[in-house]
Length: 248
Length: 275
Image 1 (cartoon, each protein chain N blue to C red):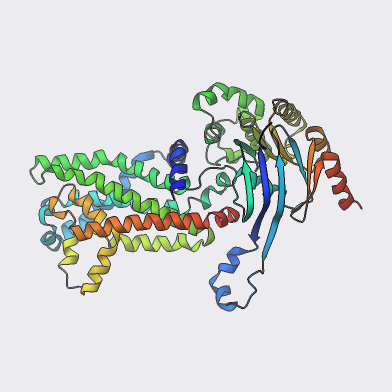
Image 2: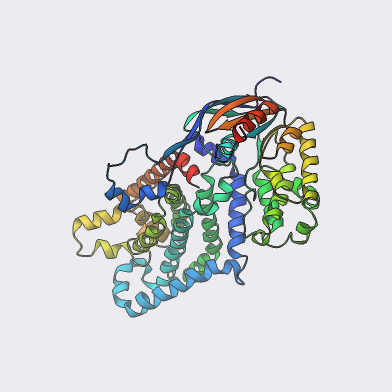
């Protein structure tokens, strides 16, 4: 096992509500120094410390707006913390937004090559596995692979995005509400893939509101409330803590 | 600073991919495709030739020196280099805001996005070089210009311009995320810069003019002045910038790069939250 894959140490990030409005000239003049500097600042996450070992499957639980997605972004490196540290050993395959970073003006085919290459897949690997990726995404996408992604439905984008991410050899997999979209047929494929990836020993962090998904895939659970890590234990313990708050 | 350079260098494949994608998107729905990157500057050149080469012929010729008999070449040289400058500035400004989706889902060094825009417009500049060379060869065979060592000014001009543009791109792209006013402001600023740089007229026109001394000094502080003098000196050795102008240009470009990189570094956390 050795060193942990993900290590968060007193992690915190601060957001500003309505930064753009604060910057407006009119407001600068009207409120010149009159407002407390702390107004509109809040911490979506603070004092968060945990470690994740290789092969752990972690479910992240909490009500809306408690910093779950922010945490995944910090792990993925697309946000920089204001406090503390996050150390990630190994490449991360992130499925954060439903679109997976697709450019709307490019076709599905071009996007698969672009996003795949940006994630570090070689052109020859992508060529060899291209049919597999498209087949996994489903017939609807195979028919539309040469039309621009802006014509895709959100379900189609997620399916194609997931197909690309599933090909990545990266040891850490981040998923944000992936299984909430897509039809039953695709959900089954997703489950099989996630099972396969977990069996390969990948480290998985999953944000979900679906209790079945969480108990099915995750052994560990992190329960967040108000930007703080409240429970770090088994998935059962985390879910129980969540239920105590939601239905007291 | 150094870590940024290392990060960008190790992601040069990413840079190439983004540039290729930008070019593909840009030309995908136009019939003439990349020819537009030639038609536009050539059209602009024709307009300025009409006004300054024909209508104000005598006034223009008095200050052109070696270039008096080949004003179209002088014009096109400047305008091709200017197209790179102006389009790189305008496209780099929204390099981060326009690609927010990619930036917020993928952990890449954020610097590659603005630098990619500069590199993409450089590719278009390179695509125009054969046209420029062809025009120069025509004038050389007519005996109007001499091709020689002065050609070496081209790589120097390109290097300086790249340094300056990357600095500007880093600065503007990050600022524009926090203040969208930058985008509009730069539309005006680039227009001012076009006339405040010896692109369609020779520097001698400014130096020989009756402008007050401080205006002339302020004019030459603009690093683009030296860069465009270098561009013109590719064909006209007498346009090669003097030591002071060259030093101002090199210093200004490097300073812009350092300031741009520092601001980008400083604003990066806030930019990522805001996207």
